[in-house]
Length: 122
Image (tube, rainbow, N blue to C red):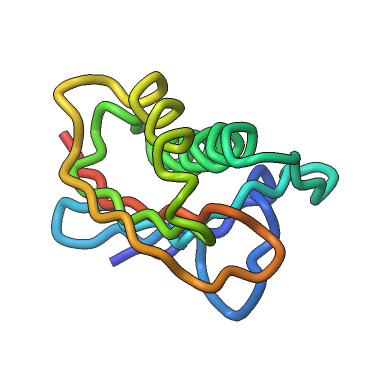
């Protein structure tokens, strides 16, 4: 098993790694929309969803993967009424065939969306 943290990703908000590799799978921490260089958070669900997915892409590149390797997505929305706007960005950014996905409403601290994924190593 390998656990990784990268300066190319937003700083962890607590004592955890960005990625864990085990049993042919890559597990990511939950990523928010923070810019890795500035910690800035964009306004609106669409911009935040895109920023989160870009953070996931950056994380996966740390182990030579991309979004096409994702098999499971868990997404947390601060407001489930944002689902349509979130889903439009998700559909545009993730390649088909899409990973399995769970989307739930969650109380998030200062952000509108957080996503973690499980990806399969080739």
